[in-house]
Image (tube, rainbow, N blue to C red; front, side):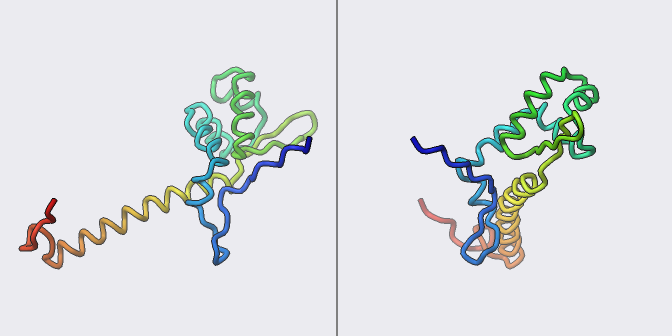
Length: 142
């Protein structure tokens, strides 16, 4: 039996022009773990805490008022999603936020938001030009 292939860790594959295409990478099945990780409030709190200062599970647990075991479980989920990385520092595992994953999510949301911005700008243009159903144009028929 052949070994299982490593999962594709990229969230932002490049498009034909070589530019990152965040909407493609985050719409794929490999990105489901990212949104599952973000769906939990405790994991979001841990991300915010680690964004301030990378630290071990015990320190994060103390700061958030949670048990070390609960934080360790949530950190494993965040690591699996590629949102948190851990490095050995002496006897500690210091966790830090993986900025490329956060940026990929931000880029996707920016893409979605940009679509709305373009639509609203077009509506504004039509309104200012006096076009549309309120300005003598026939409403679409159904």
